[in-house]
Length: 274
Ligand SMILES: Nc1ncnc2c1ncn2[C@@H]1O[C@H](COP(=O)(O)OP(=O)(O)OP(=O)(O)O)[C@@H](O)[C@H]1O
Ligand SMILES: Cc1ncc(CO)c(N)n1
Image (cartoon, rainbow, N blue to C red):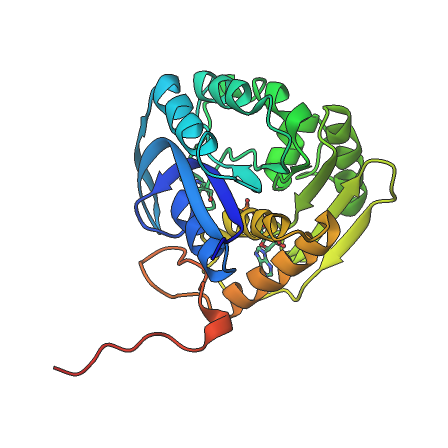
């Protein structure tokens, strides 16, 4: 059997809800073989991040090269890249690769932890021209585009304007994720070059257990691109997956729990009685 293969490049989340762990769970759940390159290791739980250890840019480049020289990866995503050196190494390692690349410009976690050194925001401009899709949340869209979103009175108008500016930075399409504001939960704005923008919606879910929702959405889009869906079809399918994962979100830990990745397969696995 030869499966579709997707790759994720990003940080490890020890709690398993976000980062590389969320991506690999999502790939598996969508029946896509997942492989990875790790940029940094976070000590993290549902309440926040207590420590981050970066790998060297050389260690990241070596992992990317080991995977890409052997496995026929059909689509990839990047997540937490932490610093300028890791962003530059990623941009260099992926430059010649023509498969669909999703760039999730991870900057701050749901619990408010800083996941990108402030001095590295500008370095994202190196990576964006390679992106088939850029997937910022509202905060990241504001920082990368310079458009005020979080304090805007016309929130939707501000998102649309920011998406337009972000396209000018070079990615072929932008999906601004609305999960950060109650009035936009489940609503994301997709803008592709040479096409009108569109708001894509799934149901808003009343839950505090949203840890890893952004990583999961990006991984699901990447998996669907690896399976050959068009970008728009992949986003719609991925949103269906995130909605299901949030409906069955796991109330584990004292903070924001993670999405469920087996919602398509039924209920929680039960421990056998001794
Ligand atoms: N309460 C909710 N109900 C429905 N959809 C939600 C909710 N919260 C987030 N989403 C959806 O989850 C996806 C991820 O968006 P979000 O804005 O949370 O990304 P993010 O900030 O990158 O996530 P994180 O940093 O937690 O991984 C989007 O499709 C968004 O619409
Ligand atoms: C490692 C990692 N990547 C991404 C996120 C964004 O949710 C996170 N919290 N942790």
